[in-house]
Length: 385
Length: 128
Image (cartoon, rainbow over all chains, first blue to last red; front, top):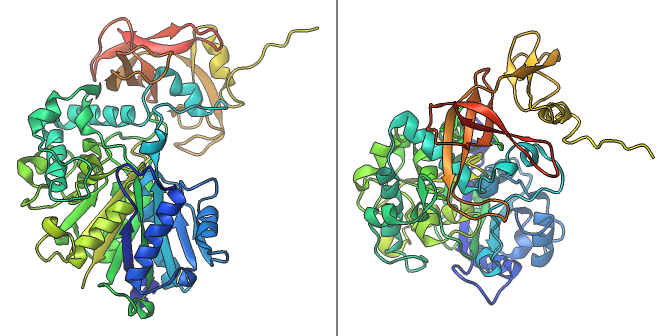
């Protein structure tokens, strides 16, 4: 029996930071408010936290977050940098650390004010002549959308995927967002609207792209014993996995197969379930193509069949595989790194507290983070059993 | 004072840029297994040997993927322009711009060069 089977690990708190446009807080105040809210749910206190998992919060992620929260002697710290997938990877790492007794109460979180600070850059300025600076930057491929556009173009070439099929993904996200009062974009939107929106990097259009908002969130993980203190239903982490492929787009054998292939196999294998057992999924929707490739590589459909799979409203409210149920990065919020919000929405659905967008009695949910230039992936399988 | 010409690139890539100044494209080739690789490394990605040499290649290639950029990302880029990934006949892929005509995925393209003020000529591709 493995450590994580002997010593199961639970998510016992989950809280968003302020979302949308947050003019009146700092990223650290946002993080700390969410941490306190999540710890209240857990029936725990900041003083109980002995594991910190974060990134993109200052030069030394966990150090500055720990200092701000007053956690000055944690036992386990991790600022793994794999982009928007980092937080799903953090759950993987926290699960191992807690199952092996290296820490007991872990917080995983992130906060950003990229909208208010207008911090998102489309270029990668290089101070030295890295390989990217020598061989990719001189051609003006916008970061990151250009990479995703080239992946979408290749997917279309190999498998006949269409812009109409990609638009279905954006429409599904918007339909979920209409059921979520915290969503940034809630006005009605059709596939025709997506197809009529401005081309940014063909074949991707404005409405194939995620939002740019402020926001973030924190979740709390702990062991079975301390999960008994929780004020809300503990959600068990069944399995997790992570991987990455390439950074420079010239590298690697395939543009269309992503790191989700490995992260999904690892997470499902650990959990002892298959995609057929999954009631809903939160795929990272930085762009519509990100969702399509994730569904294929996680095994919800065969490679190349993603276009047909997402058609007919399968991902939308009432569909066979509810996905992006918060409205996702496309319509709810996208604070630079969506990963932690995917975890929070998965917890909310499994606790049965998702309000108007609540699914009927889901048992198993998947949060799937993606980051970099479709370089990284990390997958978490959870249950409320 | 003797003028020393500053080498462009890094310790692994400067032969590529030295050749670019002569409008020649160099790719690393494994003497053991015959694998071509880009970017250069001190070992063969295919067989792990350290017996690597530089080979001049024609640059004949096929478009693997492409996008037309409609977004202004920096003063030096003037949209719309095409960014493509081309697959050399020897195997490796390189990012580039395609200029001098249209090319779709699967189309044949040939090597061209773009002059730069502060760096060696940059390999780009054009319809064959």
